[in-house]
Length: 403
Image (cartoon, rainbow, N blue to C red):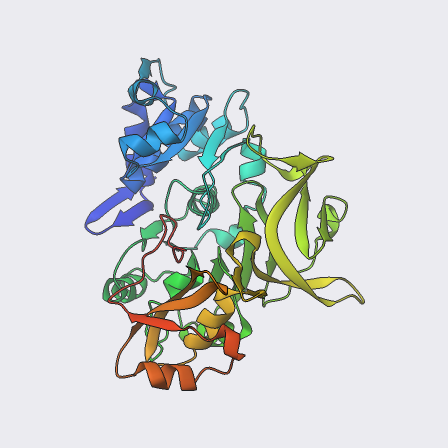
């Protein structure tokens, strides 16, 4: 098969190259600590073909981070020689996927705050949202996630199982992203709102058929911006987590619980609770009568004819300001309505009187602090007291705003 599998800068790998590279591996690594995306994919597929479990680690993990996450440096580098299966065609790869007894993939949670947890998924749980059909045969995926995290893995399987090409957009600058989307005729992109905000508002991509947004809140205001950027694309808002994979999808802010999950997902005190049966395996998840408190806070917007809700924020990211619970994403969204501000991060700074005072780091041109504050249509306690002008906003390893 000479169809393209992966494109990154000048590197192009076909599915034929992938098969040759798989056949050239005569060992297995339990732990994958690799910074080159293609190699991450190669070792994942090799583990599937040869039916052994793997743990994915960020390629840029320092030795201290490896140790702090409960691994030893010795076990990370250990590899075992094996007689790998010989693969002659892409169909051989897919046949291996249907006969898995030992395979699993362990990922580390990747929220904007907190200590990562190890979550182990089966092939069935990691691919439950993948759609395979003839209608997807011509898709070309823009790859805009970290390849070692849940969202990236799900794009990998969606593309792989339909024999689609993937083109790397992760951590590229805006000019490069624009050039790549147009050069390769990318039809599908899955990314965070932070990624989409990199794209200038004065261009569009009429060839893109579908975009998915996940990992952060998608507001109606931002959805309207996406419609201008991708005028012919279906816009999907995805809720997924490392713990459970993909659970909800909608075409706007509002989500509802799918019928197949009606007894496995519920809302209590405005928080999403997920039944154990939908979760990956982990010794690090705290359950209450078989229910996992996700920490995701929602607001119910409709009750009839079905329950509809929208996401507000992570419970541990709300900021206490003088007794008020402030959602930093709400303020960031308001800041970004100003076309002179291209990026924003809102956070709390401890204060002995108020608990916290609000601070904002922004990337902007041609605007003053006074103009920023006067343009904010927010209650007074939500207006940042400190505004710092930055060249860029730091992102997490998954491409989300770092809090």
